Image (cartoon, rainbow, N blue to C red; front, side):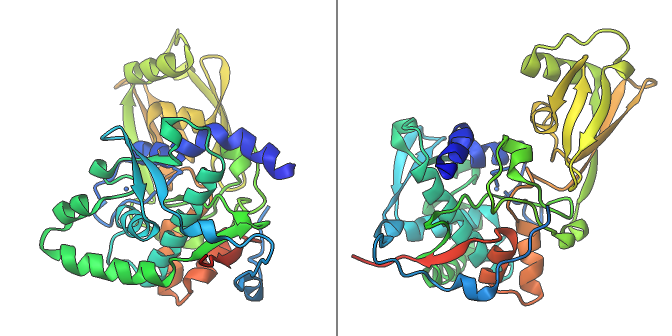
Length: 348
């Protein structure tokens, strides 16, 4: 019953979570929820390693974990039936540079697979029953072989063979919580700590409680500033919230509230209190971990952000750093999704 109540609140987010992350996080290559730029572009204790042994359930053998996935192609506006192996390769290609550490890529593959199954289990029947949305042509969430070939050019055969090898190693591995696929959300870069899912979507999942991710502060472009004209800010707030911004622009925005990870949970705007995540979405900021200032001489707001993405679940930059330090993909997932288990699918 507890799980039913939790996913009910998240239902509206799930099928669009990853595309939302992709759209909010401009990339040149890309979750999330919220998913990682290329190089061109509370506190929980990790579960003991022994808890990550593959489960063996005689009552509910997870044979359906290897069934093809139904993905809504947002570019072609059709439902694609994608084999798990193809999805793992295509998801990894869209989420991480191929030259990142193998253990980080494998963690991404298993997280992507688990997240897809979680979406399957909580879909609402829209988009022809597809589990979630991806945009292969824009390399968001999943890439087809054709897109990978065009993207990688002469390196296609080598890169594809490498990712296929990694995918086959973890093909039947799924992150689970209480025997069901876990909502293993991910994002590009945290603030140095991930945030509780309740801060972003209104309800907390036990394994999305926020953990330290100190490596992220060393990521390129960890902190960035963007200047937005007063008229643009006004237009965005009016369009998104129906606010009428009156008086001096310097008085439009007020106090902010932050969670322990540094993400803005609330901001006063136009006399109303807005959530930090909705404000971030409206203005297209890199993350909800932002501060602001206003310069009346040029009529511009400057927003300074830390991190990249919604901040829930696995930090992809953190996964990279952990892998470089020698962590396995299992240890990476144990760190970012505490209390979960790795379940091995079994054939018919």
